[in-house]
Every structure is written in structure tokens, then in C-alpha cells.
Image (cartoon, rainbow, N blue to C red; front, side, top):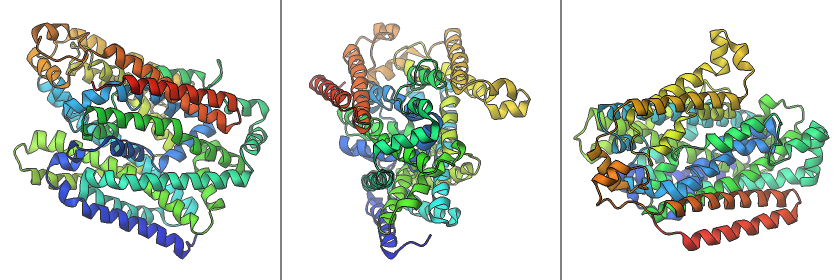
Length: 577
């Protein structure tokens, strides 16, 4: 495809502005490791929240949502909606944000040695720095790069490797130059570009098909009346093929600490209140609002391209761009997709470098260098993280495949990383056991490994939900047994941890008795109620919007009123801590 001059002006102007921001913030980011990775812990809640949303609004997100809708209909998006309940959603806002901000860590792996004692804690920190900070991060980033190839091939017909290389050079430049300061600033621009492009495409997509009613009719034509009705439901019915996976999603999958990108923004916030407000802002925008335009566009692509098989459904999103966008708006849309891509890449290579430097290089290899030395090393680590991710991208089949794989990989581990904040008895060996069991069993029940090992027929008959349950059950049993069978952490170390982060006191009995001077958090009941009602409010907002979209005005308005009333009650009773 040949772009018009106005399209090139929009695209090149956006890239130049991003590079300019990197230069502008380069001096501030070079002062210290804290400035480079967590913006000196001074982000206001609205900026921290905006950069959370921007980092999660990736170019692979609409492609992944298209794959989910193609596979199971609207209810397939529960893969994402279930996280409202977790540490990336309302549990993060009302429970974890204050704890993590008080921890003053930079990475999730650094938290290991703050919480646990002994050489096993140091070894676990090193492992998590490599495993989560580099390997799992590379899989996530690789899926995003995979999405760029898909868009470039389908929309532009250009060589995807050259196109990707140009975009990554700009992203690497401002990320390595300005660190979190530049990332936060560019994320605001990138978020606005991304949302604008998404809305423009939605307007053209619905205009092309004639609106929501013809869209529903098109679903009936493609799938048949009964199957279309099933796919248009927000919740799967009892006994449907997706129901057991849905149950796994809403009961088990969301348990975890905040993802590294969200963790990084929480600890970069000005204080505990700003950390909590930013996470609540993220939960509302990301889970209640952002997915609906993507769902509708995905549905349009399935109707407009009825011969596109489900396995290749992710290509429908960029195919719509090619089909519908006129000159000028095409440039805006491509710039918005670049913005979505760059806002996620900059986050992942930044926190990947944070793990490399904070948890590996500075902790184990060079402990007494200057701050300027570590900042220079951080910039090199940013490049290394990007190179690894590009290599991983070549091995991925699809975006949604990567999402499902990562969720299965640590099934069961999420229970432990929540429980470690509440139960003094958990130690580093507990976490090692959970990680080992999850990694081994998720590999054994994966269809690809099972086929290679000769028992593919057995695993091939298991749904994703059952495989998740198997991994979770084995992992949970492993870490509980190991916790009981091994020695607890040193009490003095645990006392220092509790004094710093001020957890809820209920299951810290021996530490509470030994250190009565610790200022424990007494607000467990209030935080729990805010979590429960906050989740209801976000879901009510989400499905209120959904009902309005599909013409059920009474249910839509009713749910919006419920949501607003709950939010008003929460903010009236929400205090720090």
C-alpha cells in the first residue's frame, strides 16, 4: 500500500515527537537508578494511572480480543475481565497498592529478599529476575511484536522486519535515554493516539456494516441463530463448552500480585494514596471501558470476512483497516497502532532492564558501583531485553496463544504470592516449590509437549480449564507441603519486613507478639469490603456499557446507576492504608 503525504506527516511527526521527549527527559533519568526505573517515586495518580493503561493498551490487545471473540464470542473476553478481581484491578487498588508503595522496591523479584531470609531467598530472587523479568517478559513482548508483523503484512504489504526495526529504534532511543520519566510522558500521548485510532476505526466499522442491529444479524448469518445467541451473551450458560473455563477464570486465574508493569507504576507513585487511586483508574478504564470498542470491531471483522477461519481471525482486525480507512485517517490509525505498540514495548524493555540491573547485575555481580554506572548499565540492559524479545517473537504462532500459555505457566503460584503478605509461615522454599511445580506440570499437560512425548491424545482431550485446574492443584499442594516441612524465615527479618510494609496482622501471630511496636494495618475489613464492592462497581460499569451498546437501555442505565452509587460510597470511606 502507498500512503499519502498527509499519512506520512502524521506518522513521522508522531515518531519525532516521541524522540524529542526522550531527549528532554534524558538528564532527569540519568541521576539515579530510582529516577531511571521508577521516576524518582514522584508520579501523580493520574499520570501513573494513564501510563498503566497505556502500557496495557498494546497493539496485540485488539488482535488478541479478536481471537477470543472468534473462539467463544463476547464471553471469551472473560479471559481479561476476570482480572478486575485481582491485583491488576480492585484488589491491587485496595490491598496491594499501599503495601507495595511502602516496600519501596523497584521489581517484583526485589520483594523476595525483603520478605524472605537466607541464601535460598537470594537464589529465588536471581531466578525470578531471569524467569519473570527476562523470559516471561520476552514471551509477552514477543507476542506484541508478532502482532506488528501481522498488521504490517496485512495493512501495508511492506517487509515487516524493516518496518518493525524502524519503530523499535525510535522506541529504544527514548526508552534508553529517558527511562520512566520519558516513558510516562510519551504514554500520555500514546494513550490519546491509541484511543483516537480505536474510536475512528469503530465508527467506520459500524458505519460500514450499518450499526449494531445489522452486526447482530450478521452474527446470526455466520453462526446460525442458536450459536449466535450463545456468542452474544456476556456470561456463558451452565453446561456450555466455555463454562468450565469461565469458572476457572473468575475463581482461580486472577490470583496474583500485580503484574510487573503495574507494580512498577505503583511504586513510582507519589505516595500510597496516589498508588491506590492510579490502580483504580486503571481498573475502570482498562476493564470497564477499553475492551468494548475492540469487541465490536472484532465482531465486525468476523461478519465482514465470513470465510476467515477462527485460527486466522486475528488477521481480521488489520484487514478492516485496509478495507475501510481513507487517506489521512489511515495515517492517524497507523500512528495510533504504533503508539499502542511503543507504549507497551517501552514498558517491557524498561522493567526487563530493571530486573537485569537491580536483581542480577547490581545484586550479584557489581554491588558497589556509582549511580551513573548503574544508569549506563540500565541503558544497555534495555537494548539486551529488546533483542531477546525479538528472538522470541519468531517462535510464536499467535497472540492469544501466548496469553493462554502465560496464564497456564504459573497456575497455582498466584495463591502463594497473595498469601505471603498475610501468613508469616511462608518462606522462600514455598515459592520455589510453587514455581517449580507450575512450570513442570504446565509443560507436561501442554498439547505440544504431550504430542512430542507420545501422549498427545490424552492431553488433547483436556480443555484449557481442566489443564489449569491440574496445574493449580499440584502447585498448591506442593507449596503447602513444603511450607509445613521447612523452617520459617528468621523472625528478625520478618519483623523488619512488617515494620516497613505494615501488613494486616491476622496471621502474623509470632511476629506480632515479638514486636508489639510495629504499626500494623488495622483496616482489613474495610479494604476487603472496598475490594468486593469495587469489583461489583467495575463490572456494573462494564456490563452497563455493554447493555447500552446492544440496546437494553433499562438494564444498561440501571447498572450504571449501581456503579456510580458504589463508587460514591467507596470514595466517601476511602482513606490511606
